[in-house]
Length: 171
Image (cartoon, rainbow, N blue to C red):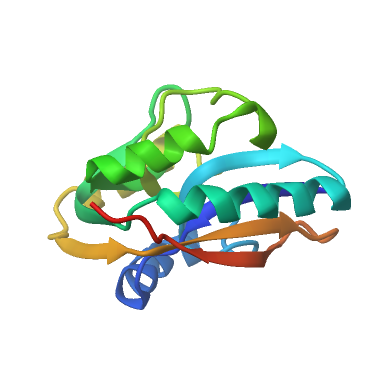
């Protein structure tokens, strides 16, 4: 089974993201809008329990983090993905780093770019058209994230929450 670690934004942000995802995101039905903190890792049930125990320890010291979402971005030309750009405070980067230890699957494959996907699985022409429209949309969300979620993937490809953790650290 695969697991991943995410933070879910507020309902307001999720509603905004879903208004685009339902049309342009090939993974729309599998998982709500989220900020990926740890990309998917393969494990078994015992491994998932070990990850859950490790996360409990990590979140005892991890701080809640502030985010702002000021605009859209794209991973073009590497991937045809459009996303909400997440500007975050240092605790998010610290948390991301703490989730990429050997006990949780090792180092990250890519440099961390916090974001919420709006469109993926689209052609280059679709990307240019959608991105052009979204760049003109006024976007200004600000919020504090105080919990993260350990997810696992079901056989049908969708993801479900295994455990939720409150970020308990203090400044």
